[in-house]
Image 1: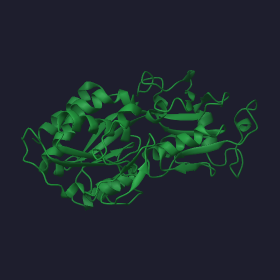
Image 2: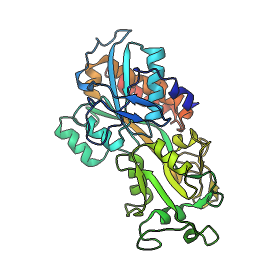
Image 3: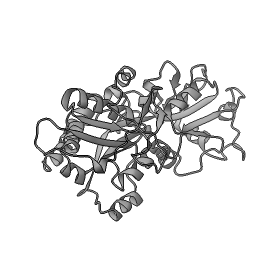
Image 4: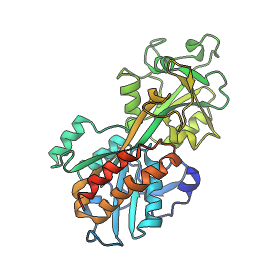
Length: 348
């Protein structure tokens, strides 16, 4: 479903940027996305768009979103439906530079929204304050949905379909088996093949990397042989073409590529659990690898630009509640979205 929806996006409607950390929203760049489609970044900054008067029924202007590659499929789908069915005069431009790279654009005011697959850090909040923005008053944190960190392997791998959390952590930790981090599957379990493991994952631009490093590995060094990539589509292809590969990323990218890769069932202590919308949740069986994903809204822009506020309201009232599941995310309780909407309604 997600592949079809992303493929239907009209060229020029959603303009996507995967610029590296530190690039601006005015950079014209092309990138290969989660579904191997090539798109072009907008030549526009969120802080310089013409706005319409708040309260008008038909809005015009642009909404600039960048950040998490994990959140990208969900936010892109929300934007596509919003532009098609709600406000065709508004151009919602969704990028996927990565959570950290997205904040580097959001903090100086280059974007209206910053998607993230991890919470904003204290040092980033301090940088916001240096730029005259205070969390709560000028920036609103919105928890969009819940994601399940998913370990994926090659379709031909018939031995590692089930692993314990401890085995996954140990294999990704530097020095667990030897000093050069050349790990064989047989090092993990003696009856597994004596073949070297190919480690993959998203690079440091992504909140998924930070979540894995900080929450799963407890900030211990990752295996030196890991191959880190910017594009999730690249990771999918690498695993699909390497029998000895293992990688980690969000559930949404797995569920849209089940024909190419297999998800590892993870045993957190009560038996193997397959990631799914029925198991991903903070109080559900896959809780050990469950995390929230976010978007952050510049409320100064929301007060100044009617289209930014309107889109924010749509995200929490309709977009995330109705489209999260279709994009591989577990939606939050309805009352939590209602609380966000009530806060936005205070603005106008």
